[in-house]
Length: 392
Ligand SMILES: *Cc1c(COP(=O)(O)O)cnc(C)c1O
Image (tube, rainbow, N blue to C red; front, side, top):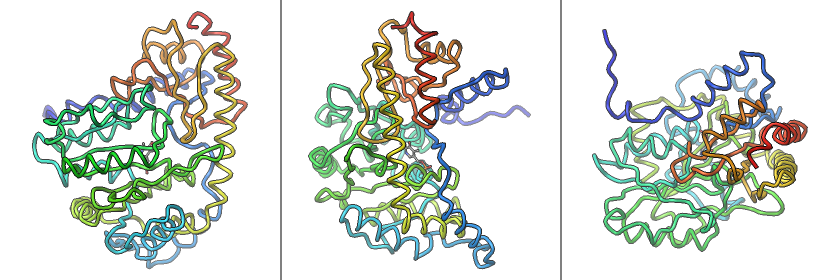
């Protein structure tokens, strides 16, 4: 039988990271010494006290059964406590917090709860691909909000036409931002709340990098903004904060109606998160603050070394305040981001992500993830100096 998939599945671009992965695997199979700065996946291991908790909890037969769909009450309380301490925002653990199988899972399922055919989702461009693709899978229409360097990589909400704004049901935002490393302040979030109220748009703020910051910077939560909890939710993740990308644990919090709608979708799709993972995640939240500090020291130094290196090549790179991405304009003589990424891999055995993979407004940029140690980053700079001279 010929397998014919749906038009909407067909219409999704091949997942960018899957394509890069294929090229990288091929290069590795050829025995080349690859420096992989492509995917944003921390190289630092999960803290051992979290792993110990998992061992312990995995041995307890009570954790072997289906978990509660809405997550363990203890975990929801730990999340609410963490939120209050970190942001001064009070959340009701029973109705305003929902653990997720990684935040991507919730981001991908949320549009199903809100979009009817043809409804619009406002998505940042460049942006994390699931905002756009999950909208398409839910029969919605993504509408790109350009993130321009001249505007600090914040969307210009006044540039969204009233016709589009009124068809929009959802808006995704993400600060500290992947891929640009940009940050947002409370003045911006106040404008977002006003926009949401004026156009009845549900705001979905992805704060996966809220804890990854350097040089004294601390990200604000969208939910700190007056009125925010009446118009939206915030997604958080243990992945980047505690080096737990493979564990699959995150949460959504904020507007109880939005949280309940996502829970309703999920109750038809999954059956909760392995309880031992919830127990381990709870420990990370309660006892992980020193891990965050150590990570930030490491990422901060890596960003500094790499940015200094690029600048020594005549590039104009800036150290981000937060996230672990260096997002930089292509060198003068590079033709396009995909072409430049191809040259990087072919000549210098370096994997980076072409900006256009995050949307058309990402063209002209390349993203380097600081997920390798300083020595490897320095080596990457050395290789560029030797093999990419003609690009500068
Ligand atoms: C890594 C990342 C996530 C987190 O994903 P998890 O599913 O929680 O691992 C979410 N949003 C952005 C922008 C990311 O880069």
